[in-house]
Length: 239
Image (tube, rainbow, N blue to C red; front, side):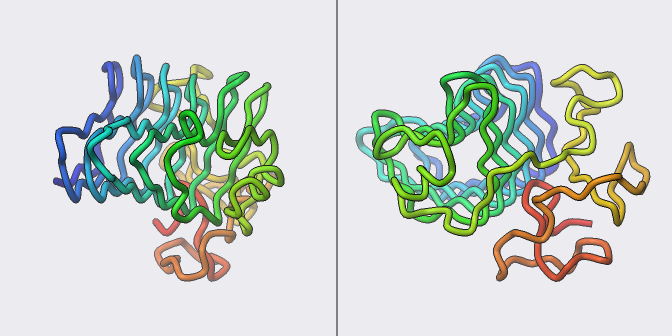
């Protein structure tokens, strides 16, 4: 099953994949302002979430939920997962995760960018991400609590090439200045230009998430000048 180009808001879970599903893909979606998790995946195999915005949900951004009888793997690639009220990515026992080219921003005190419940679950691979925590939030909970990216790197041996910086979105709460509405704009600011309400405009700053994705990822769809490397986040590798 592939879900592509959906905008999901106002529900309990935004998107819920469960019951031993396999090879499900969420591509180019937006899940925002839902009452619980933006995306919840339970008892499912080889789930792929790509180029998707998960923001301003009242629970976790993405919750990979516990199943004692399953061994599951999720691939999270080029997503913008930010400003959800609880953990941005919550991983339970029985899960392994591949995480690359994502922007993950936690801004709720005591919660995490990456929360491994009770220290369980496995980081199969994580690198070339922006892991950013503000307002009392923390980077990770695996092999102890990591308040900073440097601590997370030591605790897990992952994210050697990742950064921890404000991604400088174009307008994270939109022209209406209300977070969690359809006009929230998570494109990256660029002095070479970025999308603003459907128009290409020059910004005063360059996002640190530009041209710092995995070297092997496809970048040629990005408008010139594109730097020859993919941008992090949901719009990396897109036109």
